[in-house]
Length: 344
Image (cartoon, rainbow, N blue to C red):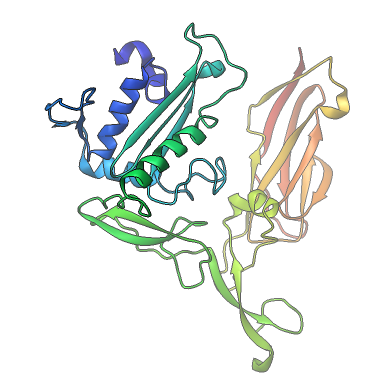
């Protein structure tokens, strides 16, 4: 029962056979209707049965599973999960590499494959992705044998939905300057209307490369495209090459700094088997608007200065310790966070 397996049920906690998996994924490809397997060519039993999930959910999931962009970065492009025609694919690997499986379905066929030991012992790091090549060969052969030179039909769009071009970076409806866009489908009345706030143009002084001031001559001004990430994405943006943020002076935001890590009340233990210089924790702050640097304080004493994205590290020292971040030339301070460090 569901009570026995608990929350692990939807993520693979229930043992099922390959037959069960193929039948279940067949529901998705069958617009949410029960999918019955046939084992003999002369079997006249109808394939479709009762509606077990909504057509909307089944079609949306099929669109997700057939989108190679949605599989990034876990599954690179142009490998075994990608086909020259629309195919929805899902791989799976059980705990300890005891099972590996793949199910793929198109508008015409469904193919499932399983690899493992009959006695349920662990394999040597064999995952479902490894047998995806075999499924790809089978699915491609079926389509080429049935219709040489042609591919599968497109998956149907859910009824009652509205197509919206969405910016991949922000998740908002794409504007004219968004560089990567995905077409997504929303139920009528639920589609978003607020445009992408991340890709924006600002007037820049050609001579300085900085934002134009009120007295900048018009001939020196050009509108340049910037990626404006929210403060909580500073660390991620810096690691992905987006650079320091642009300060939108027209908005005049209230200056604020928030210490986001470590968490207040956190407890850490020093490992006696690891050199002390390798035992440290990350210190991270969110700052809005952009400032060149902030000052970190540990136990009320100045610790270090850091610039964007306002991160540093602190080596563990036994005892109770407090942390705070401050602007260097303004009375702007973060919350105070206290942690305790002990020994194993």
